[in-house]
Amino acid sequence: MVNKISKKSISTIHGYLKNFKLYSKEKERKNSKKLNQKSTKIDYLEIDGKKIIRYTNEFWTSKQRQAASIHEISYRACFKAQLPKFFIQLLTKENEMVYDPFSGRGTTVIEAGIMGRKVISNDINPLSEILTVPRFFVQTIKEVEERLSEIKVDYKSEAEIDLSMFYHKKTEAEIVSLKNYLLERKEKNEEDIIDKWIRMVATNRLSGHSKGFFSVFTLPPNQAVSPERQRKINEKRNQEPEYREVKKLIVRKTKALQRNLKKEEKIKLAEAGKTAKFLTSDARKTPEIEDEKVSLIVTSPPFLDVVQYSKDNWLRCWFNDIDVKEIEKKITITRKLDEWTKVMKEAFKEFYRIIKPGGYLAFEVGEVRKGKIKLDEEVVPIGAEVGFEPVGIVINLQEFTKTANIWGIENNEYGTNTNRIVLFKKNR
DNA sequence: ATGATACGGGCGGCTGATTA
DNA sequence: TAATCAGCCGCCCGTATCAT
Image (cartoon, rainbow, N blue to C red; front, side):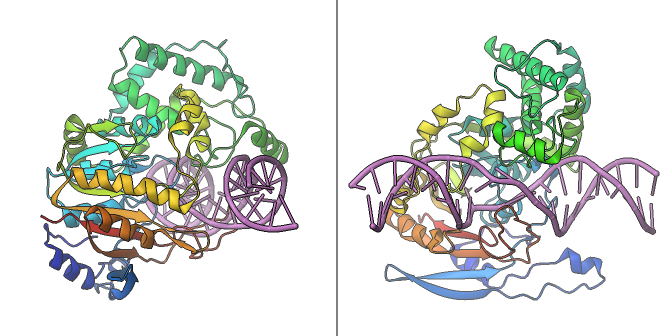
């Protein structure tokens, strides 16, 4: 619900954020045509002797399923599509380059693609590319059905590891057959975009807590359950894996992913996909990206080591023949703040190199350790040191419908109840 | 003994689509 | 129109273990 706005100079961005009023669809529905009258709260922080402005408002709403359905790929710690949309709309024009160095499930680049921007996506975890690339080239139900029908299932096949706590024998045979098919296609260099689409959907269906997934009831798929733990869950719930039709579920999710995707959005995605770059590099070292090529970065880095990305993805890595240990070796961000800061500074240097003069960096971070560590405030001097001008901190505050009960955390307590974005500009 | 680091838990409210 | 249900989302922190 961002007001239509073209690219703004730095002073008008301040004006825009200051005078921002969110047009509320909710209120419209309730026959009140009024704007959401919340005005932006402004305060100032002093960091390293310099004043920095902080804007707090409900700049976007992030209800579930309010963005394009194509984003509905579960991944650990993914921000809502409304976040990148806000900054892309505010800070870039069509055909300009948008980049996400910590791409994850690819929310930023997919959203940028829908909006007709050019994109580069990077993530050190190869799973990111597997989940992102195919969604630029949305396949029709018919294409997917036809391809699936060509894939032979050997009902004698079994996984080399014990997955009996997750899958019915027949389901497991179907998954393993699909895994082997995809591996063979890849090895023979025959893997096409339809195969990749199927790989992406299947990877997303491996485990979850409803009948739309291949597995028995388990946790939602953004967090992995260990085999030992799954056995206990099965015991506790007195359940055992029932048969799930793998091909049928893939077709169903294929349909769901494009549920509300408009025709022109699909075309724009495909256009962006044709020129897109997908990297699997360390964000500090991306020589594939030329100097001053990028108009906007919207990203969110790992917050210290709060999330175990490789562990949470063990089953998906198994399906895609990705060595979890190899990824763990590459991801070296520790829980120590000073080391995190060092790594981020190197990354910021790289961002400065590839952003064009006049371009922006929107860097989303959060509070961790019960608010003891405010990463947004840590990030401001890092950006300034490498040459960026800190524009300000943008905080999106909303009445949350979040239900993070896993760790007994109440609404608006800890975690990402607010999105905190540090906005930087590279001056001309 | 003390501080640092590693490990890993295991739900449920809400929204929107589908079905009755 | 109401009822049902699939599927989304959550970057924390207590405790065990290791290092000094």
